[in-house]
Length: 105
Image (cartoon, rainbow, N blue to C red; front, side, top):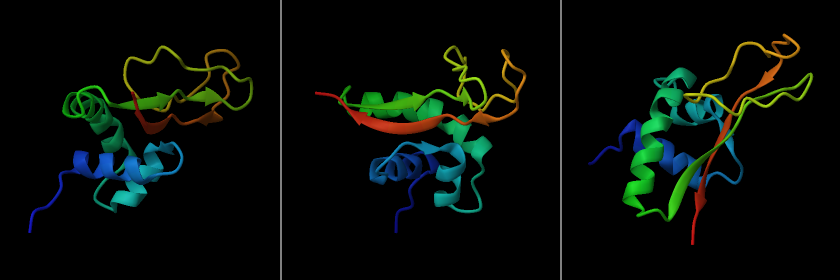
């Protein structure tokens, strides 16, 4: 029996989801051996491999995190992650980024 890698399992979870998912939701669907931190590390590679394997027909898209208090959107993140504090209002009430797979025509 052939086993899927963690990255292949992340792709399958995102393909079967009916809405964008957070890293925590993806990790819980994959089981106890995968943490949200692991998912954040894997999604960068998942995005690259998904784009190349599908020849540009599928793309991993991230809805950026935002502050639930003032609405500040973290658009310019160098890597996917959940920021700890809002630079505008200093609130720690941050909505995590959400990930989905979009099909292109």
